[in-house]
Length: 234
Image (cartoon, one colour):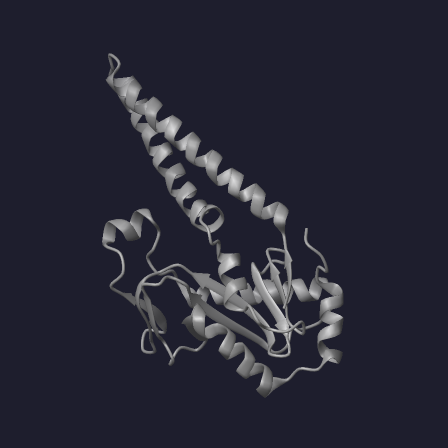
């Protein structure tokens, strides 16, 4: 499998996540010290404002650290889960509007990694994914481990891919698939009834290979797409 990465973006965002964390800690400390240093009503109010700002920045830094600072990062998780695919497949990490895009005989795959634990299911009546168990309420809030609206995110990425292909004069994208992959060791994925492929990372390569045998897209279809997509690391 060929891998095209945006190394510059990865390095930049990792540095930014660290800077945001240090800034949030500095503001939090300043707000605390100001609140206990002979405070008056105005000073107390301003210290609370600083603490509130620091809290927001902490949430941003946690989100960024989970995505860019923690190793293995989501892009590394995706790469490892697909290791062993042949060179007919190309994985694009952060080089297109789709963070993780796989192109090959199995089709064009939008890969969406999630670090969420617990039992992951799909409720067909409510048309949404659900999470049972996993971290407690406090952890879900502070570590942002509550399950997002997965289908809405898929729709947004499909639209981005459509716009991207049109901007490259590739027309309407065809043979598009979405895979929601969970990489926490504590995730138990039980969503075979979901409208999109939803599996643990250790099952992804098997599904891609199976789809490649069924769909078996020819190089005549894939070559024009690869020609327009990034061809080297950025």
